[in-house]
Image 1 (cartoon, rainbow, N blue to C red):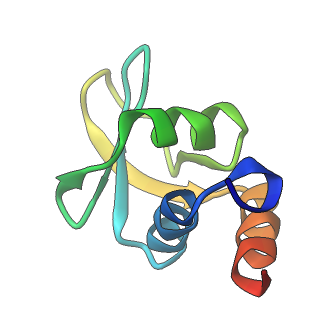
Image 2: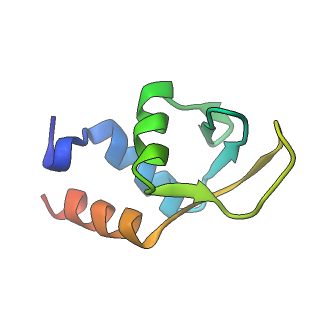
Length: 83
């Protein structure tokens, strides 16, 4: 584990979201894809449950929408990059 319990995988996923390369597929449990490839399910849940990553807009169930960082997500990414 790393800073705040987040790993290099979490950091890479946050960076991809910040770079505009990620999409969320809404459902009861969100799924995150980066460059069209699905991300680690557990890490996705960690980031979404912590309120670091959200959908850019509301959509129907199962539709993909751009993922964005919340202000807290930007802070955590900054901390992880600086570590």
